[in-house]
Length: 259
Image (tube, rainbow, N blue to C red; front, side, top):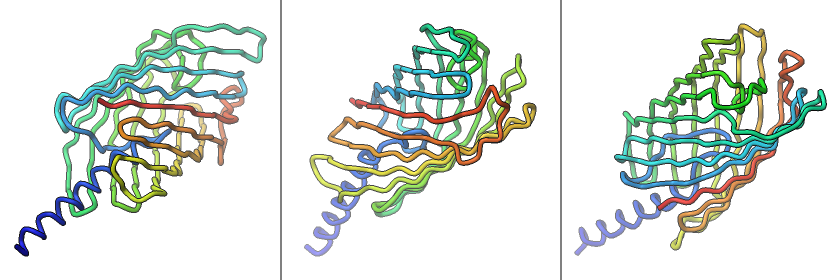
């Protein structure tokens, strides 16, 4: 009987942990290696309102994520962009489409905690207008290759990403490092309901342009069952970039639905 109670307790703890992992969801402007079960499908968007020295950009992506297995992910991002440039021109068009793939090769689970690492590649196709705005619509092919490591517990989550983005036809190659912290404000519960705070940092080094930028994003996320809603505001802490690439601020609004 004692062993039976121990099994039930362990099962309950693991169940609460699984709810918590789902509740925290992915970071808003960063990434993490936690994956759902194989065969799951997620549709999401993360609208960005970005202000730079070049002008105002409203970026609206539709992101389709599919997990063939519990440790692999493939995705297609189809974005649209509205722009209002400082030179007086404005318009809207399809932005650069993206193909994402992940492979999780390290997974260490414990009671109420887990550590995972994934290899990641993001291929950006030159389908967008040549606006010259980083990550949104450059009209140039880009290949990103990186590693994402993450630790999750019942109390907090940490994600770290290091990657390199190559643009063969330009001089905008970037070495990027992201660091994110997630803090759930509510205890794990069923049905799933959670409010999470995210504290996210994004370092970017552009050695050919002799530029460096450190961005900070403060975010909040509401999770209910299999849907989440995201809100984040991003500002530069360090902004040593060429004048035309000067970043001012971004506002993010997002949602995702998993089934």
